[in-house]
Image (cartoon, rainbow, N blue to C red; front, side):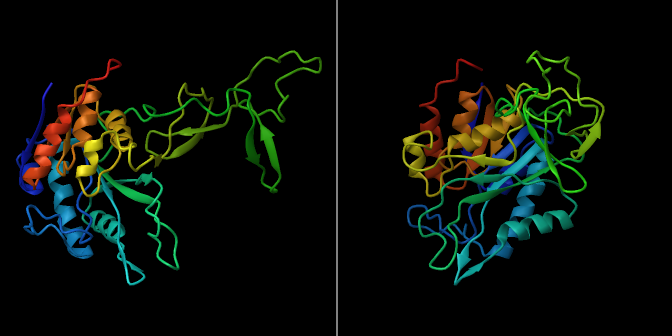
Amino acid sequence: MTHTVVQADCLEFLKAQPEDSLDLVFGSPPYQNARLYLEDGQDLGVARAAEEWAWWMVDVFKAAQKACKGLVAMVVAGQTNDFRWNAAPAILMTELHRQGFNLRNPPIYHRVGIPGSGGPDWLRSDYEWVVCTSRPGRLPWSDPTACGHPPKYAPGGEMSHQTANGRVNKRDKWGRHGSTGNRKANGERKPQQCNKRATRGYAGGDTVSGEGYEPPVLANPGNVIHCPVGGGQMGSPLAHDNEAPFPERLAEFFVLSFCPPGGLVCDPFSGSGTTAAVCKRWGRRFTGCDLRASQVELTRKRLETVTPSMFV
């Protein structure tokens, strides 16, 4: 199974990928002009102001989506200077929308932010947006419960239901009231009947009330992705040889959910090789690049430390 990384400009690299050759593009681009990303003291021109960065990222999404038949997902964040947030993620999504991209409801990467990141008068920054696009229609492959969990309430467990007059009732999966609604007076279980008007996911991406509902084995984990960060929690000590690494848990969420086993994942901002390492561990192929030779070597070094999972 191939896992390759080369030194290249991300746009040139993405444009060189054959159309429909990628199953998933996932990465974290440079965050505007937060850092210079120097290479041996040389400024490579990576830093960009918010609007210039957004226009550049539209070109990145355009090249990525042409090569990728599945999801394109980029972890992005804005910056605050002089008590003003630059709104870079919102500018990017607005411009993608204006240019006709098929945006997906953006997940949020939640972690404990850097102490003091809110400044003296504002709130600490605890999340980053993951801007996502795809071709129109349903994704060719996805497993949205791959990182899910058992449902909080088993069939018969209580769920909140608010009536038209504002009264809150507790109902079980079959529409019965109260925690003992599915039992007879003597404690024996009553025959279970499915709630005829259950709300469920709809093929078009919304929700719809329909006839019957079978609770899943794993619940959809939702679009707030909780990840521990910091020393010892990133997945590899090599991650800290990059200025702004993200944890393996974040890459795993997207790789396992949106790339089929054996599929090809691309990270055009390879950095410390987090996405590459996750792909190798979980039986996906990887291709990627980085503008800096030091980060290409770091990714290759990290790949050498990864043992494929026995659970693939």
